Image (tube, rainbow, N blue to C red; front, side, top):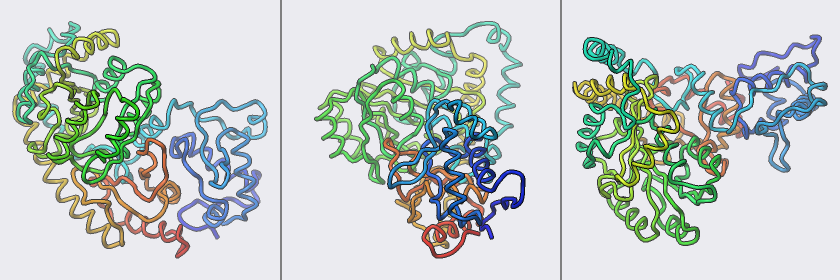
Length: 480
């Protein structure tokens, strides 16, 4: 009998068992529940999970390969292919399996899959669930906006640098973090991701070498690679980046930049300490590279944690942040702060990219900041996350799992003792969308770590399912 929560394959149906199994995996690929590069279960594991013979699994995997959906890697197993058009021969052999929409990169598929998922069943989610946000705060800002000078904002392009009131409020926000930036040093963007994209397109060239955190943000790896940038992965641990490795890479490759997260790093949740921050800035001076500091989760962290931009005075550091993680992702308001000589070129790129960002939404964010209600909302989120971390840590410990380091902020970096890419599939079959560590590796290196969202991982059912699936992969028991 099949194990787990897999719907049973229909014996005696018009479509043979191998075809049914192939179609099941093809649908998951089409829906982005299996990402390019993801590893499918071994033939033996798949046969056990679905209650069929290994011969049936081999036949199903053969069909998927013929359709251009899988590739076999010697001594490693079967993997979802990167985007590639199906040939006429493959289409003829597997007419029931339409090719998935083409994805330009693995990171795109990751984001789409997580946005389409149910947050309550998504321990790997990268954001707060919607019910943690404050719609009253948003509605209040929009009402005040409509009662004031909304008409003038709605019929104009706005300032290319961004709404003046927002930049003034951001100047105060940065001052609270110890970063001294005038409104003239701030450029608003369509979210923090847009700010990072402007930096890549303005300050880097194809062939440049760039230091990146590993593990780090999959979207950034993809954007840099798409731009022809050579990635230099710097191991990241609870103590911050490995500065000895960084020094060796910088000496050997003369990088142009280092893109990093100093506070509440994604995916580990760790923050850079003051001593490490000073050493990093000295290395930047020694090897003449600039630093991009992504502080997208900064509102979820205490203000006293050191920011590189504060220590550097925006000399080599360009600071990036936004409001999607704490206010609402729908408004897409972000910003960067930089030295004037960098900001001029970045503003030109923004103009060519889309003229301006939304003056209406930027003014609404300004009102949230001016009222002080966003600060209070962020404080409530920090308190709620602290409670969630205690609960999730207790649940993890009860099932015998350990963290790579004590979790902080939104994320924890969990060690489960088995390859988390292999683990992701049976968990998905049980209804849980996870984030395997390989997704955050610049080289997609497999391992036993996975990112856990503290806000969406408080259901004991998930931890029992995780324990059962890990035991099944280790040959100790069948998944639930």
